[in-house]
Length: 397
Ligand SMILES: [Zn+2]
Ligand SMILES: [Zn+2]
Image (cartoon, rainbow, N blue to C red):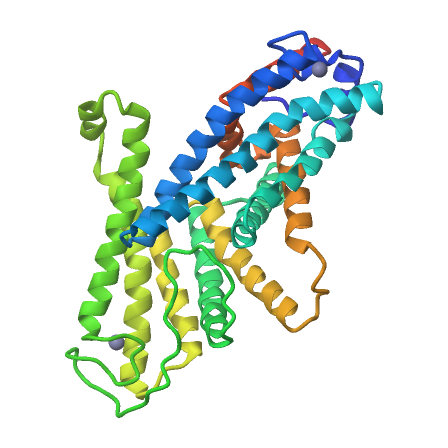
């Protein structure tokens, strides 16, 4: 893999024609635009089909007819967002090169056009924009962590990441419970949303039977804990199965045979996460006879230990990102940030520019998710562009 510095990039590529660097599969810029568009229509709708199936799975609820139509409309809009971002990269580069810059430079080749094309996020409805920004900010954090690791300033390990996830989860669950008290709820996408803090109080309860009057749920505590554990365990396993089976959809038996015990890891993480969380909150409610948002701190911390079953850098950082998101939305509500500032959209553009720039220039430090995303959405055109670029870089050595 090639780590492109500014100097090296400009020496190798600045004098290139755009058909050598940006659209190596065809000479003419207009052909490049139309072929890129077709690839991105296919790729974007394929990508979002997977995203929407996963989201519906994670909600774990059956959809009514109305909701299916609603989800389908959202799917169409998300597809337009994806294909606009994907296909505009080539076109913007051809235009920029002809109009403003006579050559390719380090910052204007990927960073600039991909920051501009981030404006396509306006195709998404506002509540989805918030979720997309959350994801991309998290990826930027991952990119920074990977960059620091490559520079030798820190080392990632499953143990350290578990600790970060535990601390992050403690803060995040606490903020989520406080956020639910404030009435105006921040849109978040997480494994589960902790219930509102219960106002009921009662006498402490011993043993394991029944429930405390303060418990934020109905029915016996044991049922509540087990139901959550099993459901999330199922979701985790279903996600692993889909990931294993979809690429081998034509040979399903072979795919099923390849499933191992290791495929249960995600299920153990998801199930353990919700199970431990509920267990701790229930135990505290029963012991004190009242509920409090602060129970989320020990509950989140201990629940986070389940992450050890399936560690990954982006998930380790996710609670921190989502905590920041809640704090930012509180700042908006308390008018500490001007209401007409399109912070979400600006942040999205900046993150997208930076991450796509990283994809081309610093492939080793780039999060895997971005590499897969660009591969899928552009139907592998992104890899062709990357290939041509690396060839140029290596030739100039
Ligand atoms: Zn061109
Ligand atoms: Zn309970």
